[in-house]
Amino acid sequence: MLGCASAPTPMLHNTKLSATKGIPLGDAESTAYRRLIERLIYLTNTQSDISFSVNHLSQFVSHPTNEHHQAAMRILRYLKRTPSTGIFLHNKSLIQLKAYSDSDWATCPETRKSITGFSIYLGESLISWKSKKQQTISRSSSKAEYHALAATTCEIQWITYMLHDLHIQHQQPALLCCDNQATIQISHNQVFHEQTKHIEIDCHVVREKLNTDLFKLLPIPSSLQAADFFTKPLPTAQFNILFSKLGMKDIYS
Image (cartoon, rainbow, N blue to C red):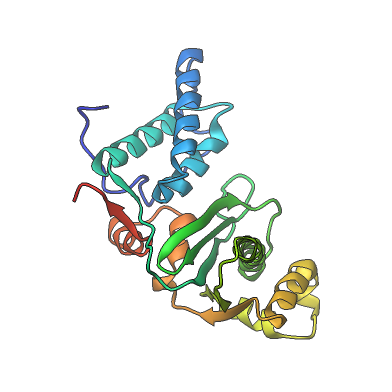
């Protein structure tokens, strides 16, 4: 792939991959595909911009097809464009946790499960992120958003404990940005309605941490939702805008 043309994004924004579409790969090609995905998963430890694409393709390692292989090759073309890009950790930024939480509702065409995505910053530095398919099916976008919010809350709590163990003084509460108004209203509502009983455990987790001032829940426009990066493939323009919010730098520039 050294002689290939580079790609502006790791995945086309209209990509719809499925386990049943495409021509199955042979044994040798399937083994090569799995080996490539293993290496790309390792690379996501420092290249958060390919997290969603790699997570999506890793779902098809048991029976990969030519469409999955082509999508994996596009990630390599994208990496050729940015071989020296990585997370930049600021040494003088404010010690303040800020998080973004989002989900893509029923995005899987086969199981209709949603995708959880979040990104957490310490000052201006990205220190934690996730792109993962939810374990249960959500009957509404609010439920999917609330599952993502609960996962982000638990991650903030863990990071807070770790900072405490390292004797690092940080400003509390953390700032947690969400672009779903229904989710924010449920978080502040002290009464469980019939429509929210199916997410009661997540509600208790989020509300308990909210009441103890672990974080402050803030609304944010969808256009500025940085966690969108980890829930779906994006058009080039939006990808570049959100990429700039990841705080990644080119060490050769």
